[in-house]
Amino acid sequence: MLLLKTMQKVNPMKAIFFEKFGTRDVLQFGDRPEPAPQQKELLIEVERSSVNYVDIRERQGTYNRPETHVGGIELPHISGLQAVGTVIAAGSKEDKVWIGKKVVAYTPKGGGYAQKVVAETSFCVEIPESANADLFAALPNQGLTAYLLLTASTQIQPGESVLVQGASGGVGSLAVQIAKILGAGTVLGTASTSEKLDFIRSLGADDAIDYTREDWTKRVLENTSGRGVDVLLESIGGNIFEQNFECLAPFGRHIIFGSTRGPGQPFAPRRLMQKSQTMTGFYLPVFLAKPELIQAGMEFLVKATLEEKLRPSIARILPLSQTAEAHRLLEDREIQGTILLDTK
Ligand SMILES: NC(=O)c1ccc[n+]([C@@H]2O[C@H](COP(=O)([O-])OP(=O)(O)OC[C@H]3O[C@@H](n4cnc5c(N)ncnc54)[C@H](OP(=O)(O)O)[C@@H]3O)[C@@H](O)[C@H]2O)c1
Image (tube, rainbow, N blue to C red; front, side):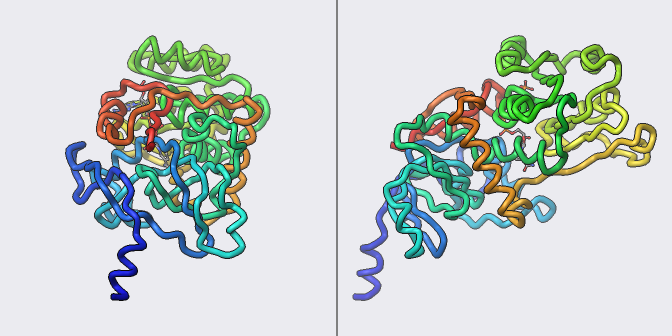
């Protein structure tokens, strides 16, 4: 009887989930039990969530390998690291004041590909009821990555030059804009098609460079009076990784945060001595150990968007049921900005 009562309390919700790792076919659309907020957590009725490239790696099982596994994934799993919606329940008495508020939430344990998601209260920021959910749903994971790359992995100084690799993507398109907001000088972005290059210029980049051309590094040098860039944000890997050093300035900081083309060749660290350069790695989940930096980042992103200094780029809005198509669009590189999911 007690068991029956407990079961009756769990409401079903629509979600995208997977029970095994693999290709896009493993993504299932169906009913899952609504999550229950624990202490210091809020339950959010999701209006919009969105898709990150890391969701693809998670689905493929890449993040389940010992060397990349931070935090762990239990199957079945619902991905989704960012969401906007209305708070409908709170796990802690003191958090009941959040109920009814519209929030943007960073959900590092996933769960955003659903009609309801649980988020830590400290990773939620209130936004006005009238705020456009589409703009804010693109922010948390991709925006935090862009912001922390420029403020925690390195502290960008006024006037410094920045090169953002893959600048038409979710993280890249925000990084170009955030670099400018933080006072960077020349900001350059790379991409693979002329349409994406136009898009990068429209974000405020000083130049956009086709990195499928063998001589792309020359154009970076031309834009920086032959010095190279002070800060290089690198998420591509492959042969791009090695070429980066042709256009990194003396004292330049090279930050690795992704490998869309694979890891590239082994690197001899002593080459950094030649120009007193630094190489740093970045992995956002590690920053969960520094929640104050995540909170500061969330506040910055929401404020800059409300003030219209930051304009997250919405590539498409797809129904939640078509999340597999969203993964295809990212895997086939057909996207500029962020793909949102309509969970209604
Ligand atoms: N370390 C972390 O904590 C962290 C956090 C968030 C994201 N990331 C990484 O940051 C990168 C960008 O993430 P995102 O969510 O912004 O992804 P996204 O929107 O899909 O953007 C990826 C960009 O990479 C470029 N790209 C180059 N080679 C590619 C390939 N073989 N497949 C797919 N894209 C390729 C694409 O531009 P072109 O087609 O013009 O080349 C695209 O603009 C990913 O590598 C992701 O894993 C890391």
